[in-house]
Image (cartoon, rainbow, N blue to C red):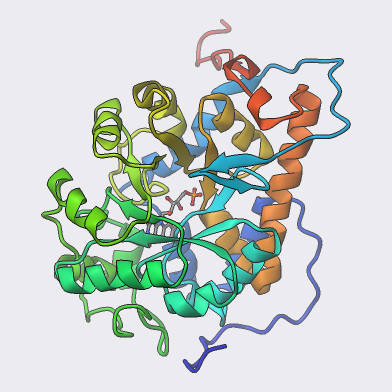
Length: 379
Ligand SMILES: Cc1cc2nc3c(=O)[nH]c(=O)nc-3n(C[C@H](O)[C@H](O)[C@H](O)COP(=O)(O)O)c2cc1C
C-alpha cells in the first residue's frame, strides 16, 4: 500500500477482547500507542475545558421515549449534500493517521468503505488523496488554506479530480490552539511519516509543538469571508464550512452559499473557553433556517449522543477520536468496528425511544435534564 517506512508500533499479538464501547477501544489504544501520539490524539487546548464541556453537554439532555410504536424496522438513512447515507455518522478529518496504524488513512478508508460511510480527509493526511481515493471510499476533502495559494488551488483541483464530493473548509484554525500536551512533549512526526499531500514534507524543527510551528509557517491566518468566492472558483464541489459556533457566522455561511456547516470547536483543540457544540447547535439551526444543512461534531461517543444531536436539529454528526482509537487497535477493522458500535447503539436508542426513522427524531424527543443538585441543596 505504501512505500513509506512503517511507524514503530507494537504488533497485535492477541485477538481483540470484545470491545463494546468507544471507551473500551480508547483504553486499548492508550496501552498500545506511544504517549506522545496518544496525547496528540486525546488532548485539547488550554486547560481542556471546552474538551470536557463537549462531553458534559450531552448529560444536560434526557431522551423522552414514546411507547407502542412499531420499531420492528429502524431506518437510519439520512441525506447529506444530496447524498443518501446508510446512517447519519461521518468520519471527521483528523491529521497524521499513520501514527496510529501503519496504513493510516488508507486503513481508515477501508473501514469506512465497508459500511459506505463518508470519510473527510485532512489536508495534513499522511497518505495521498489519490491513495485514499483508490480504496473507493466515499470521500470529502478538508482544506486548510495555505499562504501558498497556488499549492492550495492544486490541492482542491486534485481532490476534485480524485472524486472527492465536497470541500470542507476548516474556519476555526487561523493559528493552532495552544495544546499544552504537545508543547510539553515537543510533538513531532515519527521518522518516515510525512505530510503526503504537501510535497511529502515533514513538520518544521521546533522548540515546542512541530504542528504549531507548521501552522505559523505555512497556514494563511489572513483568510476572510472575502476569500470564499476565490475558493469556490477552484472547483464545482459543494463547500462545507467547519468550525461555526455562532448564529452570526451561520448567517454569513448561508449568505456565501455554503452547502453545509459543521458546528465544531475542533474537538476542544482550538479556542479553549468556546462553548460545547451541542449547547450552540439549536441557535445555529435556527439561524440557518433550513437554507444550509447543519452537521455537528465534538464529544459524540454513543448512540444516545447521536440521537440527542439529531433531536436538536443536526442532519448528521461527525466523529473524530473514536475511530482513531479503532484504527490504533485494529486498523481498518477497528474503524469499521467503531462505526458499527455507534450505528447499532443508535438503532437501539431509536427503538427504545419509539423513533423508527431519523425524521422522527424531532425536538420533542429530548428535554433538558433536571438540574443536578448543587452542594448544599439537600440540607
Ligand atoms: C487527532 C486529531 C486531529 C485532527 N485533525 C484535524 C484536521 O486536520 N483538520 C480538521 O479540520 N479537524 C481536525 N480535527 C478535528 C476533528 O475534525 C473534529 O472536529 C473533532 O475531532 C471532533 O471531536 P471528537 O474527537 O470529540 O469526535 C482533529 C481532531 C483530532 C482529535
